[in-house]
Image 1 (tube, rainbow, N blue to C red):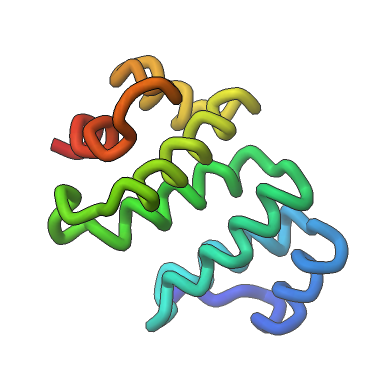
Image 2 (image 1 turned 90 degrees about the vertical axis):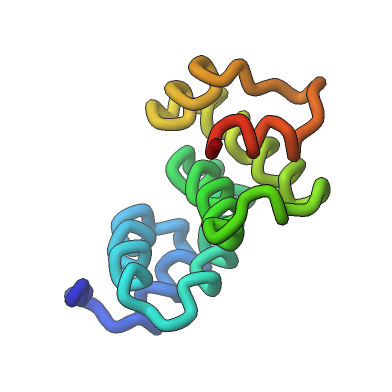
Length: 122
């Protein structure tokens, strides 16, 4: 089981109040076993938007596409657009995994986002 050294509440507070990247990493690991993994999206968005944390931008992308892991073709255009937006932001901030995906699949803001998501995961 993926248990953190700190309790979930203190991790969330450290993220919300201080943008604590160590707490964020601990929380991301804790959420691997969490029954409601999609709750992690909130903390990823806060760390990305408020604290400009590259890993969080990638995690937002990941959360959106994981919600459709059963059939990526079911992702709606608005969700796909948000996912691509955060993937590109992660790439622009030097996130290596985002860089690999963006460059391999020629991801950009000018193409249909749903088609780009489907291309990545086909």
